[in-house]
Length: 128
Image 1 (cartoon, rainbow, N blue to C red):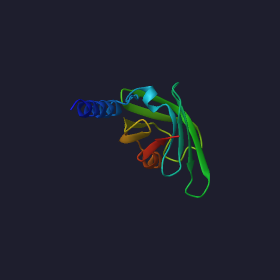
Image 2: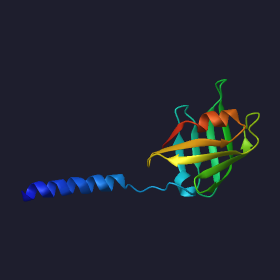
Image 3: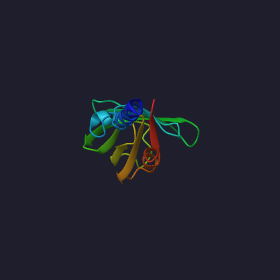
Image 4: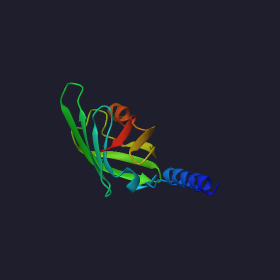
């Protein structure tokens, strides 16, 4: 009877530790990294409050935008400061974010007038 109990205890401990995997869920460190989505957009978010985004232009080219971001808890505001800013995307975009796992990130629209940013950020992002 003893070996069966030890096996059950071990399986429980493994399941418990698996469920407690540690990754930041809010703040700047939760966003930091290189991320991509199914559109092929590459988003680099640096801990110091800057970002770069490379996206495909509907006409076949590439768009490169960079700027700053601020984080309060689980809300981020992106502000483009340079690059190929699409028309209507000069202002900030604010999103709530969720870390779905250590490798996946999701943004939920709070306020943004930039259609292309809303479309891109509305997808699930995967860590590179």
